[in-house]
Image 1 (cartoon, rainbow, N blue to C red):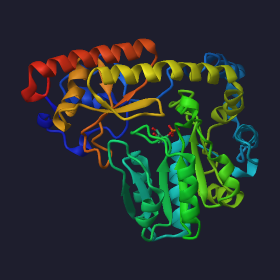
Image 2 (cartoon, helix red, strand yellow; image 1 turned 45 degrees about the vertical axis):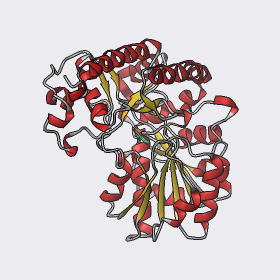
Image 3 (cartoon, rainbow, N blue to C red; image 1 turned 180 degrees about the vertical axis):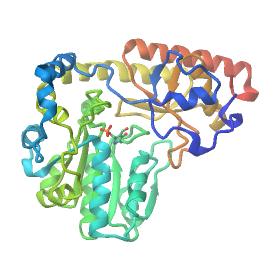
Length: 392
Ligand SMILES: Cc1ncc(COP(=O)(O)O)c(C=O)c1O
């Protein structure tokens, strides 16, 4: 059964990666089937090895730590983040994952400009549109085109209309493309006079690395020049903590205060908050993550290209790929891979991609090898049955 004949409408597809249940059910596979999950973008090196012991120690003595409200200002965690980012603690708001930071950005916006549209550079993470809808902010899509999804600051600003909020993901989920710092700087110059806040979600910034001498070109120094810039971050991805959740928002102190006023008290649990400082201090974990990226990202990219897939050059820990025969052939790969025990991310829920691409997470060497082998098998099968694109 291929996606075309599976009877799935766009809303039937899970909205996020790491959700095999509905897909296994839809394609008639056992719900306890062992899977290689290449659909969620998490660092395979994490969580750090010391974390289990750290948590156990905190829970000793009858879990006294759990019976205490956390500091509502999260001073210690904010100071650790501020020192890490080279900003003042007043410029930091700790959040319950990057997801809460996105909703706070929308909540803040609706307080200031209740009816003004929010422009979203697409294709991108579906939570931006969800946050806008939840706060009654009309969405104005700003589409970028394949194959390179390049952003032209002048053209983008010309298309903003009455928008007072621009949401941009860097590097972008699901394309993996990184808008250069110079382009963001230009965007900030062009939007400054228009009263349009620019929110840049850098949930995957730790994965950008230093390829070809190009650095991540940190945007944090721009916070001092542009008070309409807001940066969103996640510690969930790089430390592989989706069950624990940590994120933060960086902005000028006034914006941080206003965003904090939209946040429920004690939104971040005490254990997660106490974890911020030791996580950021773990330089060895960062070094090992950089080494993994430097070795595995080019290797997986080359392997995917060698299989004849179109691969969008990525500065993140995932790749957006497409079968050269087009949308139907690409969509047919998902159930075929699933039958081989490999879960990849569909793109049905990404505006502009229309399901015609797949997103593949970068894993460790063994997982990447398994992904490439499964893809090679499935593509071979496609060649033998071109009519149905290799659907199982
Ligand atoms: C671009 C982007 N931002 C934010 C998030 C949410 O991060 P967190 O899990 O820390 O809430 C995600 C999760 O997939 C994401 O893809």
